[in-house]
Length: 194
Image (cartoon, rainbow, N blue to C red; front, side, top):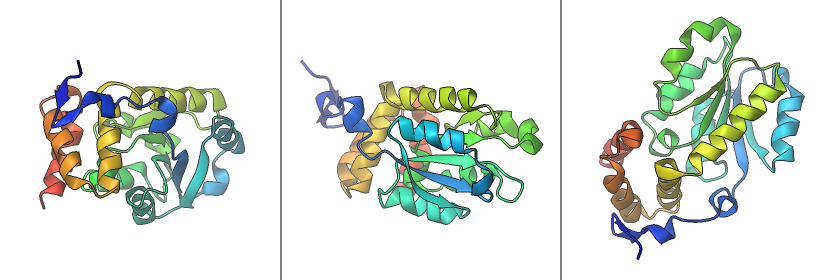
C-alpha cells in the first residue's frame, strides 16, 4: 500500500532515473566559457547531458530553469561572475532553489567554499583542471538528487514548471518538516506565497 504524501501517492513520484532526468540539458553559467575545459563537457555529453544554455547572465540561467529548457546548472565560478551571485539569486527563485547545482570553484574563491555550501544544496568541484574530480562530483550530484527527499523536490519542481501549482504546493508542504530539505522547501514556499 502506498503512503500518502501531500495528497498524492508516492507511487507518482517513483519514476525511473531516466524519466526523472528526461530533460538532460544543463545551463552553464560562466564569464569565461572558453576556459571551461572541453574534457568536462565531453564527459557530460558521454553521460547524455547537453548544454542547453551557456551564458554569463544569472537571469538567463534562471529563466532557462523556469521555462524548463534546462534541468541543472553548472556554475563556472570566476572573478567576473562569482558563484555566490547565482547561489544568492537561487534563494529567491522558486525553481532555482530546488535545482541541482554544480559549482566549479575558482582558486581565488577557495576560501569561500564552506560558505557556498550553505547557499541551497550545491555540489562543489575544487579543481576544474581535473576531469575525474569534475565527473565524480557531477555523477554524485545526479545520484543524490535521484533519491529520497531531493527526488521529491525534483518532482515538485516539474509540477511547478508544468504550472500545477496546487500539487507542487501540497508536495512541498508535506516536505517542509523534513530536516534534510527544510532549508530548500521553506524559501520555495515563501516565494510561492508572494
